[in-house]
Amino acid sequence: MPPTTLDLAGLTTRIVGPADAKTTIVLLHGFGAPGDDLVALAQFLAARAPATRFVFPEAPLELGGLYGDSRAWWLLDLARLEAELRGGKPTDRSNELPEGLPAARDHVSRLLDQLQARFSIGNDQLILGGFSQGAMLSLDVALHRQAPPSALVLMSGTLIAESAWAPRMAGLKGVPVVMSHGRHDPLLLYGVAETLRDKLAAAGAKIDWHPFVGGHEIPATVLAAIGELLRARA
Image 1 (cartoon, one colour):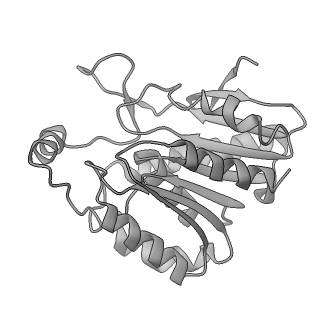
Image 2 (cartoon, rainbow, N blue to C red; image 1 turned 60 degrees about the vertical axis):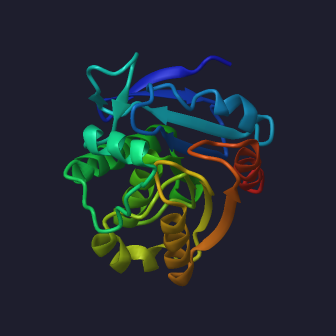
């Protein structure tokens, strides 16, 4: 089934799934990816949870000078990132509060409000997640909304804005969280992902942790875990 494209909160948004979906999952792509980067996941996941609506918004920022349709939720210091890749030493970003994070949070939160109103989606029917920068933003949005989504999917994300996040984590008590991270991720430290996992677990979130031997990617084992999360809500 080809995706339907809507404008929600000023973001080009692709939607795949039945009109009478029981569960809706919103997935945010990572930094430097095209707006449709994760859409292909719908076909794989729908085979496990056909009563699911999949929603894929495009990040608002276009990255000039990069190959193809590259987008971002907030900007990064590319020179610093390239230096880290060359040196093989990713940085612990736990204490960083990205300048563009509040604006990105507001954008996605408004998108969720419009999506829920348009399709009559309750918080208990909504799952939020993403990959890399999209995972970080998903968690930030969930921590700042009046009521969290019913579950979170955090693929290859990391801990940022710790001073802002830590006091809010108790709001995720009881919320299922599928988390994954590659042990050899060259961009985001595996150990910091473990720290984030432990902090969320200590706050009462129900963590389903999926480490894997690999880098900054989404392996089949992680997709299977997401499929199980969706199937449990069918």
